[in-house]
Image (cartoon, rainbow, N blue to C red; front, top):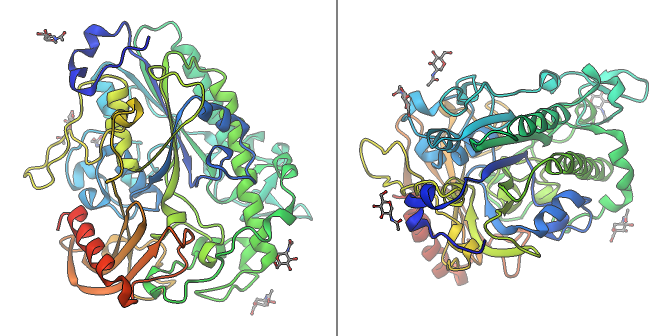
Length: 510
Ligand SMILES: *[C@@H]1O[C@H](CO)[C@@H](O)[C@H](O)[C@H]1NC(C)=O
Ligand SMILES: *[C@@H]1O[C@H](CO)[C@@H](O)[C@H](O)[C@H]1NC(C)=O
Ligand SMILES: *[C@@H]1O[C@H](CO)[C@@H](O)[C@H](O)[C@H]1NC(C)=O
Ligand SMILES: *[C@@H]1O[C@H](CO)[C@@H](O)[C@H](O)[C@H]1NC(C)=O
Ligand SMILES: *[C@@H]1O[C@H](CO)[C@@H](O)[C@H](O)[C@H]1NC(C)=O
């Protein structure tokens, strides 16, 4: 079975392929590439690492915005946050901008049985309070019943009093229904896979893990692999870059709000938090990742990988103290870079194939369409009015997986909004609501650089004034992978800076 079907002939694929592959999309909430397969030596992720062995590993994949709802809606509709006009949690694209076809909907319309298990769409208004059922899914999405306790006092302190803690290792016996949301989702996903075993109709299953998103609630035993001492000197770049514009800063308000951090009186907005608590956060993040890796292993053992395309990704990253920050909510590499691992029976691999080209989560939709040999998805013409309903703003990674794509010229475009020039609690500058947004930071990742431009944004009509610049950042990844030295004010870099600014404007489409 080494026949390779190029995307341009895929219109005939339904006749030429014996039967369609199932497709499984797995999303981990707030997962940065802290995986063994991505070279992280502290990580304990044997199941994801083993899975990655037979897969394509995209080493430089980026989210479109480091916040759940905008990132997921972008991934699932194949459109940028600017197209969806979604930078917060509070609008539904079908009624707000256009009745755009989603990734699962496209599979459903092409004969697949589609099912959502756990957190795929962000819950609430941004998916119409239904995870976009029925248009995206063949059956009502499964949400674990313990999900409702996500922000409840469920973390026993040393006296057994239940608290709303950030760091929350637990005994399952003490938890509501004696389980956790991700355990429930995996049980349901396995039940689903078994129930489809005899069906001739292919399925598209999306499985969304809640962890390692905060709070760090996981079965206690996962802490055992991670001695706290290993997490003190985790990273060198623990300082706020001296020339970083204040608008770029995010004061990690949600960490400060948790019971175990509230009383530490962390100075607003820049902190720092104590070195002990810093180590504890990192330890808990790694333990939470080990926990979901274990569940991933249980799930993947129940799949037939000979007949299933599987994609694994994080919706965005998380800063574990880099730049002295403890959250997503920014345009830094650590907040935007995610694991992206794709495995297809069409490309059997004896060892992992690393693909170093720059990719975006936007690329997942057209890539899965090509891997399933559905009719290729057109690229959206963003100036067309009214907008096309079925298209993608990303590019298919299928040619790269075939080994024919040239990836060196690709860039990733991300963005983050702010309500003003300084970090604030009210409005919360970590996650401003649309009507409060006054500044947009656009960030371009090229092969060598990250270039970020913060400009005036008008929420009434979704336009920017590109001449009103509030901050500019330039990081050279050859010398400064941690993005600690902002070079934007150095005249030696004027030429590079102006070239990248033009490239960014081109990518934004202005
Ligand atoms: C593709 O399908 C069309 C319509 O069914 C048919 O006319 C054409 O010959 C097919 N091409 C190939 C290469 O099978
Ligand atoms: C949106 O599109 C779907 C099919 O793609 C259709 O069933 C539905 O009626 C449309 N809704 C609106 C409001 O146009
Ligand atoms: C969104 O939800 C509302 C209220 O529950 C419902 O009437 C409407 O049909 C939903 N829209 C779509 C596109 O499913
Ligand atoms: C971290 O590094 C500092 C300076 O290099 C050293 O003094 C300290 O002992 C280290 N801490 C741990 C827990 O390894
Ligand atoms: C934090 O501030 C509160 C109120 O001012 C005070 O009671 C508490 O002792 C402080 N905690 C620490 C750790 O300094």
